[in-house]
Length: 108
Image 1 (cartoon, rainbow, N blue to C red):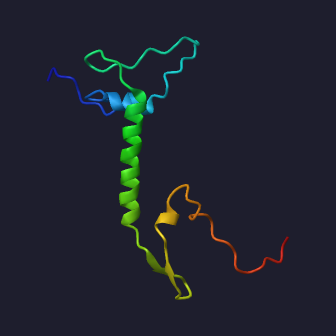
Image 2 (cartoon, one colour):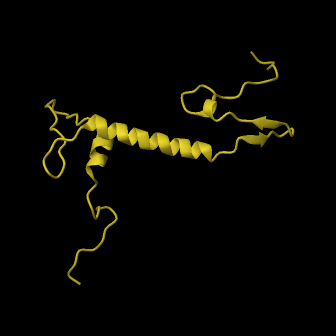
């Protein structure tokens, strides 16, 4: 066989423009030169803020979908029922912090 062997280290297809806009950072260079503008296949410049905003919206939708699938009622070890408020459990809402101790510690 004279063909090229498939290798897991080499991508069969190059990543799309979304990958470079989201994961490649802002193009900061070590030599201090200004980064080149990111362009698509046709040569038009890509609006990085728009692409990143769309990706953030997709991530937020996936997060909401994952949170909706979580159970809202559970039981503790003692058998007490606990109801979870999904809105307060989201990231940045402040409701998902570490639990507080109910008994006093003798140390400190």
